Amino acid sequence: MTHRRNDILLEYQSQLHVCLKDYALSFLCTHCDCHNGKLESDTHAFLSPQPGTLDQAIKDVEALVDKEVDGSIQSIWLMAEVDHWNNEKERLVMITDNSLLVIKYDFVMFISEQIQRIPLNFMDRISYGTFSFPKRSLFQREGEGVRVYWDRLREPSFTSRWNPFATDYPFITFTYHPVTNLSDSFAALCDIHNFRVKLKDAAEKVHAMKPVPGKANGVLVLNQPILIEVYVGLMSFLGNQNKLGYSFARGNIGF
Image (cartoon, rainbow, N blue to C red; front, side, top):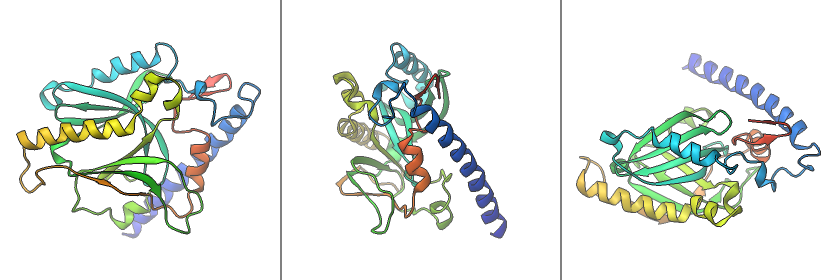
């Protein structure tokens, strides 16, 4: 147990060093004349809406679908994932006949870096509402989110809660991508409420056709606050403010 904690601490220190380095670089780039010091409002600096970029990304992620496992594609979405430490991460999300696919896509290099496949018949709950934080949390976020659960009986372990790199959480959380107000087409592509409806309908159909023994026979939809258990959140605040989880034009470079 001691060795495990030491490994987590070393991993955290390493990631902290990387985040500080990225933050310093992004601060220098996004406070130059080309951004006029206005990073948050400059939606045109995001690389995903650039001409041809999104079309190429969609074509690339469509190729990741395994027809035998996933079935056909029903819809594709551009969203921001919010992890358990309140870090925003740009994601392309696909609803297929049998799966929810969450893809980390690099809009600079045009490659899919990571894919998470969640069987729809494992989903048991979808909650949506405003974000909430512990009363003494220093850095909080506003807005709405959607959280998808696939194992309601399993709670995250103590180690996972305090590990910023934990990937064994039995749920995933989404919110609006910052480019949602760029145009009507992006508003539709980033609409988390329509996404929730489409996901519920797809999951209900798979539950009826391919029930999993011991699992719920349907999907419970709840309108309730989305809790992010972060008490300090300084690194996520700095990262989110500087859009480190997105492919973004920073001065004369993009990453």
